[in-house]
Image (tube, rainbow, N blue to C red; front, side, top):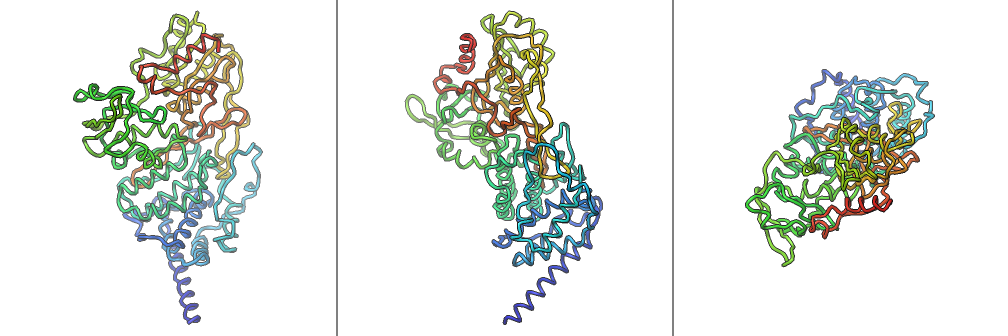
Length: 578
């Protein structure tokens, strides 16, 4: 019996090698390979623990070669389709040794990289993040021979930009030449694994905040394999992808692109009610429209305690894993519009708590064409005077061309409020920032990926400076909250580097750095913060947001009274000289 088992094991290994070598021979260039254009031909219903382990290692192996092997990095192969040639061997392998032999046989079919004398030169910059190769080199899965070959590729890797990666704008990654396979809204099992592997590898090697992900990224890959393999319809695939995206805790990350996919996930109906989480309760804050006398049925400041019969805390717990945001405050910011108050049905039942207890309100939902915005359209413009001596600037409506008029209007102002609870419509750090900042000094430092060393991030040689000769000498308060994101956070950093500026409010969105777009099979699209943004002393901003001098949040009582408590407090502080 032992001899029979040994013989069968030998035959299986030989079979895997033949399949892999045959697949290697079928390789074609990126532009001419159409073998799997209609489907991957991968069938896998419920992966065993060994298969999950195999597939996780394959994802690391495939992603490593994509950005390290010179021939692959240059685009000599259709690397998406090469995955489908590797998958059968990985799925069939009964143990780590069989997996190693299958992948090693595949490697033998790739050209051996030429010797790279420059690959051993270490960066002279200050390193912020080092590469993580998962289990490729720890000897727990790959045998010695495969490990040796992978080491050789790492030591003689492709250097610089390649077919799949380059620098964009200010040094954020440009994920080039990726096919979104939009004609496959529900990709098959092979393409779903491609989606997982592609996203995982991009984050592993080119996300500047990878070290701030709550869970080990290699474990995330392993954990999501069953979800992607077993996604039994289009919505299940979209849900799995959304949960994966949310794992990186980046407010720039979200599900974009396909409206079909977004509506599958969230529904294409929205309530006419606006609501925010205040004091950890979902509070009515306004109305998009007064449908059927809605304002007579609900009052601003009332609490929504249940939606279609389900308690709000229960819904929050259910939806949080799908909300891509850097911190909890920003998840709560996005929950009402994106999940709680959206749906697939034309009506929704809200249970509202008022002075006389709970009552139910049936809503007719809005359809199509709606979008989220945090711009306050009731404000007349981008700037004004409050009480004749306090300047007020609203960056969502401010333009740099307004600055001469602002200087004239604020000539006798004693102080200024910059209401950064919005997204600036113009770039202000070196215009308005220079107006309020007398000293030329640093306000930010960056990290960016080193394309010669995938996975390594280093700080810029010097922080960036602004200011100098500022004409405004009074005190300035910048108001922020979770709606202050990206450019708003960056601008706040530029302003608060001045001695006369303080920041009031609550945790900002914690997502800064020029964004990079990622496309995935099924026509899905997402983004990441593409460069690292830090204070000059190295203090992070991602996830934690900007530094705040005066912590404050609105209250339910203030909402009920129609007050802007943060603005009132800013004015009070300025009048007192802090």
